[in-house]
Image 1 (cartoon, rainbow, N blue to C red):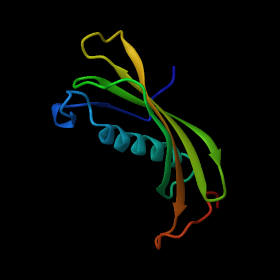
Image 2 (cartoon, rainbow, N blue to C red):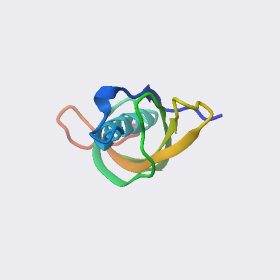
Image 3 (cartoon, one colour):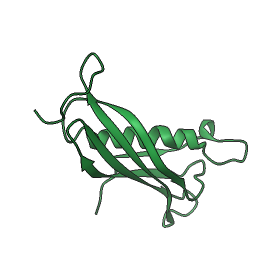
Image 4 (cartoon, rainbow, N blue to C red):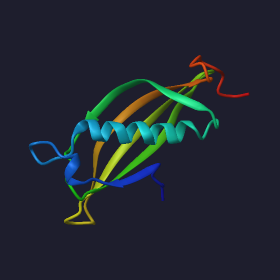
Length: 121
């Protein structure tokens, strides 16, 4: 069984006028999940340089338990690309689990001055 990088329950403060969760709230959690995976490669500082192919497939609702699963797609000299799959467990029917969002994020490893440094070494 795969383990999520992070898991959250989303609250009323996270909703838009239509009653579903703001996309920006999900993006923030996707970013956190991605950097959690990136840090498995080095206990160093990483910054987000790109988010591409963010696909919002289904809405997320207040009370849903949302799990963020990560997979490393590529490790370069100074960067790492992470795929994040977001699954919602519906609060009204805990047996219902749906993939709601997917994204690909690239992080760069940096030093204290914000300059790229090798991930390894």
